[in-house]
Every structure is written in structure tokens, then in C-alpha cells.
Length: 165
Image (cartoon, rainbow, N blue to C red):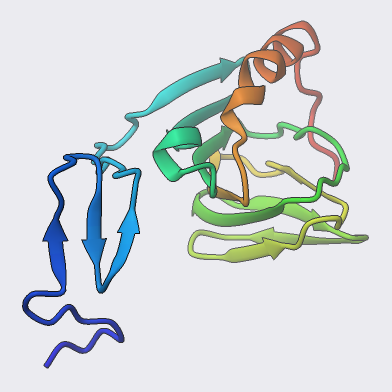
């Protein structure tokens, strides 16, 4: 028996005559998404001076359900400034220490730290440390990458300031 909560018994999965449709337990899914496997550093890169973003999955790849990207800030680099949006922002620290503002509280998140910021909550992030800091960012629901060309242009024209603290 599988330790996972959902198992597929024999004959519950079928491929229809339409190659873009599958049926699982009587439910049909019209859009079959392709798996994505990326190596370290792979994805769609958006260099922005002292800030780099690498998008792993977004848009049609996630059926517009979420966006996943890496964000890296060089030492002593401020982020975008306090802001909010209706979507949830989730940060999982993968390197260095990222200072994250949630509401009116700053936390200094080391590798392995998890920060969930519900939609509508004011937040920001910056690297106040001596080494490069990175987070894996989950943005849900929706897409985020469609905004990146404009965001990257803005950062190039308005280079990040030094981090506060």
C-alpha cells in the first residue's frame, strides 16, 4: 500500500483518443502540462544589476496557478521596498541570510527558513549580510513572470540602493 493519500487503482487511468486529454477516476483534464526538470542555475534569467531572478515555472507551465523563481541579492542590497499585492508570496531561503519585512516586523531568515506572506500584507526583502543571499519564491495564485521585462527595465534604470538595518 502506498503511503501517499491518493492512489490509482488499476483501470482508473485512461488515455482518450485525443492525445491532449486524459481521464483519471472519471475526471477529464483537457490540458496536459509537461514536466519541467532544470539543473542548478537553469531557467529564464532576468539580471538586474545587484539583483538576479531566474524563473523556473510560470504561466502556462503551471496553468497560471503559481509562479516559482529564484531571487539572488548581492551583499548589502535593498529589495523593491515595502509593497503588497493580492497574491500570496512565499520565500524559502536557499543561501545567505535574507532580511524579510512582514507587516512592520523584520526577520533575518537563514537557509532553510520559510516565510509565508498572505496576500494584502505589506512586505519587502533585502540582503543586509556580507554574502550573496537567495530565496526560492512561490507566488500564488497567478503568474508573475509576465511582469519581469518591465521590472528588469525599472531596476536597470533605478539600481538597488544599499540595504538598511
